[in-house]
Image 1 (cartoon, rainbow, N blue to C red):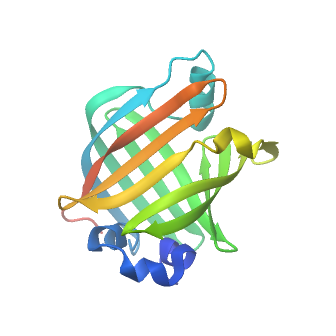
Image 2 (tube, helix red, strand yellow):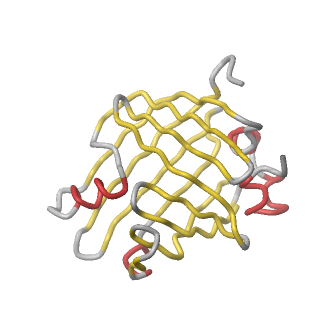
Image 3 (cartoon, rainbow, N blue to C red):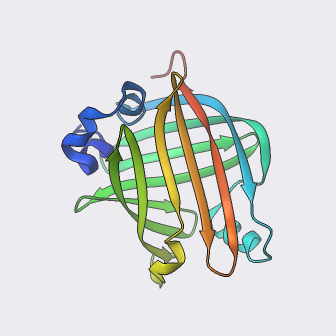
Length: 180
């Protein structure tokens, strides 16, 4: 198998990341990470249909989080669980960018390594893979990964014009024992 997906997207900056970030993004085939997180959905009436399209989890506090990473030749599947809620996505790389399919929504992200963190910036979004959505709608998407206090931490914070906060989920993960 070739180099890890995030190493291909980030290039030489990948080697400068903290050990847990490199480990999470260097799964050879399959691995499960466990931790805890919280999810906050916005209150606008459009939040529910948007969350349904992207298969986003419901609001929850201090919920157990499990992420199964499955790697194959064409990319990665991330099978997330926030308590009983499932959220799966498919990720792949093309032309130096990271692509993610999350439910019916397809994203193209630019990734940047900044001070030992990975920052995701949404460049393009399509509904159902074909209907382009205005890039300005996603200018307030913040995604960050880092190592902090000996744990991998994630933050995804999405707000949309006129809708306001869509979803914010954050938490931490550690590698599971005995994963293949």
